[in-house]
Length: 293
Image (tube, rainbow, N blue to C red; front, side):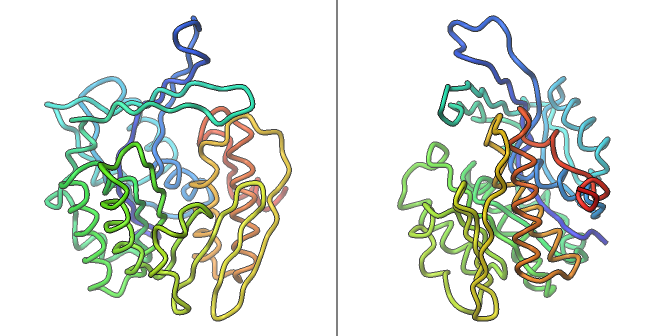
């Protein structure tokens, strides 16, 4: 049994300054669900990850990283006919990095419902999905639907991070329809402040809704009460992985049976750890480091 089952597209990441001028770059791996899986595994949780990589060196690097971090890759697949997806991340002084996606016809975009192991999803304690994977195409969207359907049928709680990436969607209207439907089936919903209108019908009292506000902290409405937590002030190297790290910290605290206020606190601590590193995941703490801070 996994504590958390998740699925998505693992990616290679090339980070630099302005590409047209810079002569150096940094190679890493990333992806919303990859960051979350590593964060949870470092905190001692059993995490299963479903995705596809190409039969290439980037794919091999992704497998090496995830396996080395203790993530269960029993369901990861290698596609010999498509490359591993790639992100190009250019730093900007005083701004968030500029990210360009190279994911068209990638291995990860070929994730399909047939790849979803219904029995393994049904045996997990929690299913977590993001709005990134449904944006990659019809097959990945149907794979998410299959996983969510399997979880709900088995009584497994579904956690959803809206994670709206406008550059991946054909239109705002389509994103609103798909993400809204996904959010309405979540027991636990993570949404950024600027995404609230996208999923407004899902913001009902019966759902645990966590709102992240960047430097303004985060809040949750649970059991009719609102709880708030301030952000943690740290030197910011790269803010890219903060949201996924926050979600992982919050889910970790849910699995540990902590209170909503304690969940927010753990989430903000992991979000702060993520931004202190140039990598989305390399700066994340182990459980011992978190508890002994």
